[in-house]
Image 1: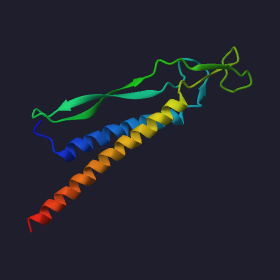
Image 2: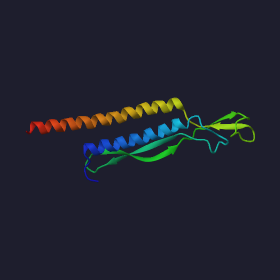
Image 3: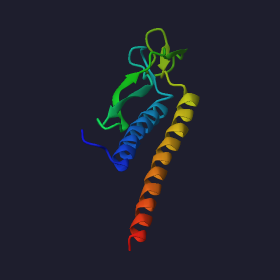
Image 4: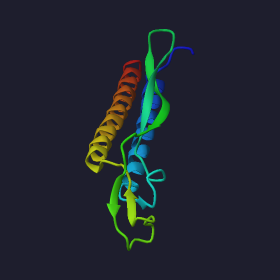
Length: 133
């Protein structure tokens, strides 16, 4: 890969944060979901990032994979629930809503930081062009 520009680096970082934000939103959307078995219960997901080097000392980030949590879903005894198993139990999604909200706030701040980097770079480029006139 040839040398990456500041715009490439920030753009890739923003793409990675967007994946992180989407997985967090999916986790929150499924936080209170219930099912009739532990195996089919929703488990939170987290993206795993890797560093991408450009061969000239520059680096950015890419999504390597999305891992599923090993957290155990919560079993509740609700015999009247339509999804209850033979024992009258339902399984609630394995999602820590507080942790997911913290993740969402952190992700949005990191995304905004990259937007600010791009805005600053654009402003500096325009100022440089004005000097040359």
